[in-house]
Length: 107
Image 1 (spheres, rainbow, N blue to C red):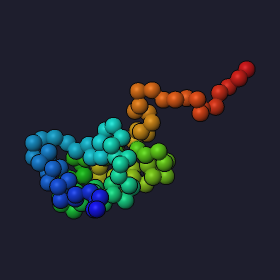
Image 2: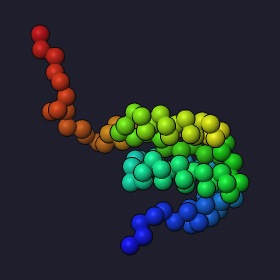
Image 3: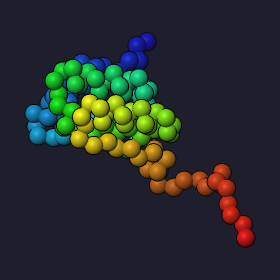
């Protein structure tokens, strides 16, 4: 079973969005990108750039649970000339977060 992202369909869809006057919030706004690996996100972003889509029309989701991966993806986007990045950590999007695992301060 091939689980690779369909690069051609992704590029065609993004071109269509740009033709309709939309900007590109690639890799989602609500943590959908976490279903993609860092390598997949870079490969897909590069495919858009290689197809001639302007980086200035893109605002890629670069937030991940890993600070190292977030910095890597954000640097890639900035170096490519992205208009902005969405660096929100996916856990900050949830309606409620279980805080039982967080340390507490006791006086």
